[in-house]
Amino acid sequence: MRERVCALETSALVARLEQLGIRVDHDRFIAETPRFGSAVRWARETWLPFAPAHADVHARDFVALAACELWKRWRPEPQSQEGLHELLLLGEDHADRHDDITATEHWIRFWRCLRPLLTPHSSAIVPRCCT
Image (cartoon, rainbow, N blue to C red; front, side, top):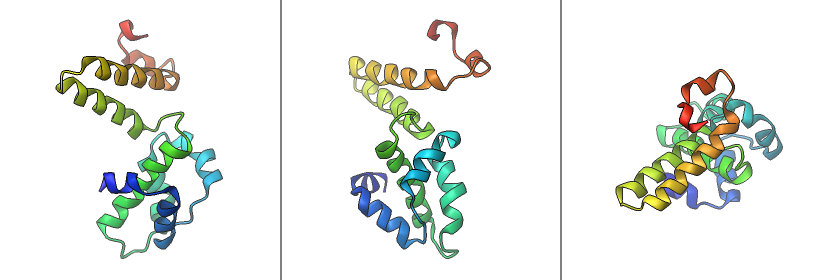
C-alpha cells in the first residue's frame, strides 16, 4: 500500500483524504507538524478523529501513510520520525546488498537530520564518537 500512496500526486492524496472527511490545510500542516515530530502521530491526533466511524483499517492506514508522504513533500526538513527511520532502513538495504558507499550516505544523512533534533538531555543516548 505504501508504494501506491507514494505514487499518487499530491492533489490525489488530498482529494482522497477529503473524501474521508478530513480537511487538509497545507499551512496548518506546515505550522504544526514540527511539534509532533511524527507524521503518524499527527494523523492520529488531528486527522483520524474526523474520519468516518465506519472507516476500515485500510482507510485508516491510508491516512497515516498520506501524512508521511505529505510531510516528505511539504516539509522535508526537519525529517519526521518516519522519514528518519526510512533513511536507516535504506542504509540497511544497501548494506545487505554490499553497497557500502550508498549505505553510508544514507546513514550520514540520517545523522545530519537527527543531530539538530537532539537536546542536551537526549544527546546522552548518542555515543560520544558520534557527537
